[in-house]
Length: 526
Image 1 (spheres, rainbow, N blue to C red):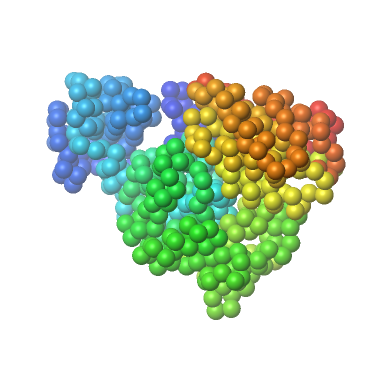
Image 2: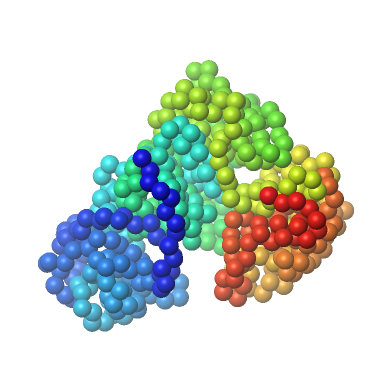
C-alpha cells in the first residue's frame, strides 16, 4: 500500500529536486574501477564506497561519486573541491577535469569520456540493472508528454502502481517533484528508478528526447516498449537537418535500447522508422486506409474531450474518451493503449478499465482549459513548433463556434529556422493573432518577434496581426477582444512556471495570468 503523499522539499543550496533512494546500498569503489577500467589519478580507492552518483556539485549527498564533465561554458572538474566539501566520497572526471580538480582529499578517478559511462555506472551503484519495473519510453517531436501522461493513466486504471518522468514532472506513486529537463541525466534517472523500487512501482513511463539519446541520458536502461509519435521541424539548431534529427530519435528503436516498439504511421518518418528498425514493431495509424496493425477513428469532439474508437488485431475494439481536444490527442491516447498492451497488460483488462469511460489523465499545459462555463474559452498549450500549431489550431477550430484568437511567442537561443513557419501557420489558423514574448533567454526579444511577424504577414489570409510585447498585456488584449463562443489559444508556455529573460528565470505562470485576465474582465475561470 502506498503511504501518505510526500511534499516536495526544496533544500537550500541544491539546484533541483532529485528523487533518490532513501536506503541506498553502498558499492565498493574498487568494483567500479575494475568493471569500467577507470584510472586512479590520486587517493586511496581500496576502502572507499559510494552510495550515489551525480553530475551536479550542488546536488552532492554524503557518499556520492561526483562526476565532472565538460559543459557548454564550464568544466565540472572545476567544482570537484565543492563536491568533496559537500560529502562526495570520490570524483570521476576526464584528464582535463583532473587538472582542474587539483589536489582533493578523496580518490580522483579518470576516464576519457565519463558521460558515456555515467548510465552504466549509475545502474551498477543503484542496482537498477537487476529486476527493473516495466519500462516504457516515448519519443517524437510532438505529443511525447501527452502520450506519457495518457500511458501512465491507462496503466494506473489497469491496476498497476506507476511512475512517470516527463517535461512537466517526475512522479513515483504519490511522490512528485518538478522537472528541469525533458529527460533527466542518467545519474538522476537511475536514482529515480531505485526510489521507484522502494515505493513498489510496477511500471515506469519515461519521456525520451532526442537530446537525451545523443547525450547519454538513458544509458543503462533497456525499455520493454518504446513508442514513436511523429517527427517534424524542430531542434535543427542541435541536429542541422531532418535526417540527423531522425537518426537521433531512431536510436531509441535499437536492440541496445529496447525490446519492442509501437510506431505511429501518420508521418512519413514513422513509416520509415517502422520499415528500418530491427525491433519487433507494432504500427498504429489514424486513417483506416493506411496499412497498420491498429487504427484510431474519432467519433465525437467537444471542448471537454475527444471520443474515439481503437480497433486492432483479433477483432479488438474499444471506444473511450481522452479528456482533451483534438484528433492528435486521440492518436496519442491510442498509441498509449497499444503500448500498454504490448507491455503485457491484457486487452481484456484494458477494455474493462477504459471501455465507454474517460482516460483519467490530467495533462498540465496541454490544451488545458482555464476558463469556466460562459464567456470565451481560454486554453494554454505547450505547442512550440509549426506542426504542433497545425494540429492544435485545427482541433480548436472544430469545437469553436466563434472566432479563434491566438497569442504566442518563440524561444530565444533555440532553433530560429522554424519561426517564419510558426508565424505563417498561426496567422492561417486564427482570426486574430497576437505576437508576444516568451523565453527570450539571451536573445533580443524584438528580433524574435520580428521574425514571427514576418512569417505571420506572409500568410495568404486576412487575419489581423498585432504585436504586444509583454505577455501579461497580451493576454488581457486577447480577452478584451473575445466574446462568448470565441476561443483563445495561448501557445508556448504550457505548464511552465517561469520565463527566462536575459538568462534569468522569473516566476511566471501563463495559466495563472490567463485566469487573472478573465476574472478582471468579469468572466469565470477554472
